[in-house]
Length: 123
View 1 (cartoon, helix red, strand yellow):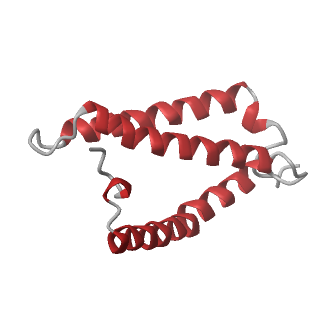
View 2 (cartoon, rainbow, N blue to C red):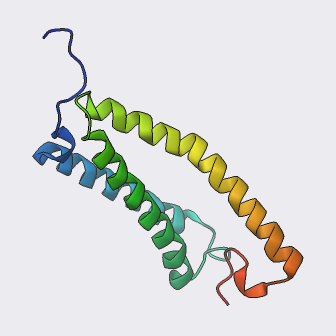
């Protein structure tokens, strides 16, 4: 009806949905590339290290994205709104939990002096 908002089931995986997701993926990757080229040359990480860091982020975000798309299509409700809610929860509470987990693991690694498990150090 005229008061309906949001999208229908399957809208996240139709032609426009796939195009929009691809476009947003290209924008996200382009932002990472731009950020790398904007870093001062003396602080810029080598390509290998940069790739290792960004690939972890990309794999994690792809997993969360496809899980959110799948979960959003399981309901009769508006999948676009449910995707947004899932994304916002992940970007807030999920990041807080990840931060707490990384701090805890880093503390244990420092305490045990496990040099090979330090975050961000690739040898």
